[in-house]
Length: 367
Ligand SMILES: Nc1ncnc2c1ncn2[C@@H]1O[C@H](COP(=O)(O)OP(=O)(O)O)[C@@H](O)[C@H]1O
Ligand SMILES: [Mg+2]
Image (tube, rainbow, N blue to C red; front, side, top):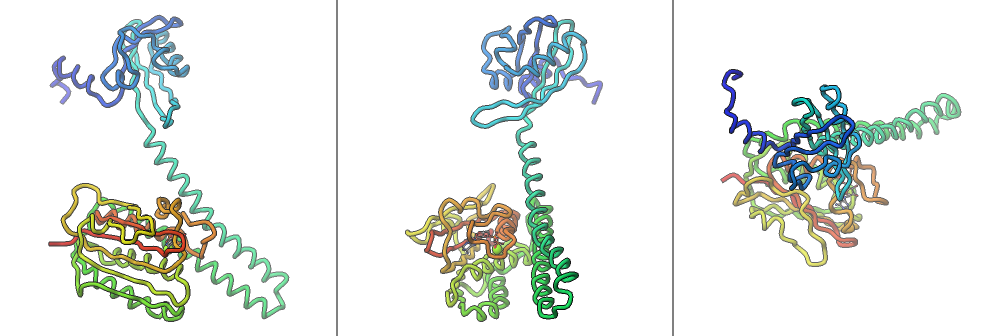
């Protein structure tokens, strides 16, 4: 490859069309440098029009100006990171390299997205650690109590062991959900290849949940065809339906009904609001080309509902509506969203305070 250098015109075109802003700067060390040339991305970013515009007018970044000055003085490579403020703060990396006597070039790289991803990862780690530390602190506290005050009190001991068991269970659920989430994320770019009967998944999950419903005096209302084939992964589809039903059970008043509907619809059909007294919001839309038909499952409850301002955040990791913290991990809907995304499907929530909640997950149907 090395001995087939591109022609000068090709090289110029590549430079001109490079997505990263590139500037050629001329000047004497210590004196104001001027921009001799900028590629399309640079002209766009700095709204450059005049040739030989002073660098400091285009780029009010003392760190970059210093790096340019240093490169002009010592002919070396200088790199700096800086931030621009605006409607959206952006993070940049600038590499200044020598070109000729009194001439350097600057390549800028927008690192905002990488920074954001890094930030999200750090936030996630902090949240996960915090969520694990709470039950752990409680466990340690009770171990201490059992060793000291409750040593000779069999009744208290029994009660504390019960609480410890609960806290250990909470830690186990958190770890299971965290592992589940990372496993789903790991192969999120690979579409599942199997053909799965969504109606069968619903029957399996509702059947398995029946005893829990009976214990709370709740009833299922299941409606749909005998079978509905979608392109999917059976275990992950079970996870979706199970999480939606778990939430419906958790937030249902005793004696309430949980309605589960399965149907073959278009994407618009899946997103269409079903009631006029609730807010409907699409939490995830199929990315890429829309399919003609989708297998959709709706899970509705008669619970307290969710106020409009919380709806967009429900599928964020660890997001729980304040005052509604019912022993969950806050990861269920994040898992649902990632599974649906892997399937190139969609997720819709419809709710209002006091009006119950409906979630709809839809997956590409197989022809
Ligand atoms: N059916 C529902 N009714 C009311 N609120 C719900 C319902 N489903 C989810 N939510 C709200 O969304 C939050 C996130 O749900 P989820 O991710 O499943 O976490 P978890 O169930 O562990 O709390 C819940 O904490 C709750 O505030
Ligand atoms: Mg849940």
